[in-house]
Length: 210
Ligand code: PRP
Image (cartoon, rainbow, N blue to C red; front, side, top):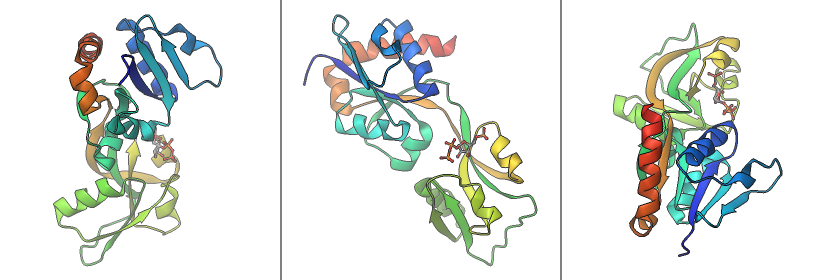
């Protein structure tokens, strides 16, 4: 294991916010702000290395130890249940997981409910807890189309502003769980790199309280 702290950041707007939090915490890496297509950046003096990965892949890098820590959405943590430590709620990237359907949709308990979603595990567990019989249709995106085309009765998806639902004549029927970005750590790394990781947790912790 090298001495650098390897940090997986979610590529995109949220990731830039997250990097700024790390920078404020004393782990700056100025080269990351040069706008190029590079994916790995390091500051040898501070002993930190950042890499940009697809947001839904952060947890895999951390679980497998390719990254020591990273930032992942609670949606991904609930869906894939990676074996990692969840250290901190960053209080950014806030949204919610919800059940949505066409306004006129009324659930008929006598029938199996058809649910389209990218979050099959979350949906499965939610309806299991309610004792509701469902069929899942796993989709990879543009979930909102499914009830419009009668592919499904409802969807389980992320709602942030609600604009996507509104513009497709759908509405939230049930809230499942609030979502936000979380700082996660590889379990072994947390033991061996606890100094740096705890420093980050403490520094970023004060930023999220502010
Ligand atoms: C997410 C989600 C909704 C939308 C919700 O989609 O699946 O479609 O954002 O945001 P809103 O409530 O602010 O409109 P994303 O952009 O991740 O794309 P995809 O699910 O279609 O891949």
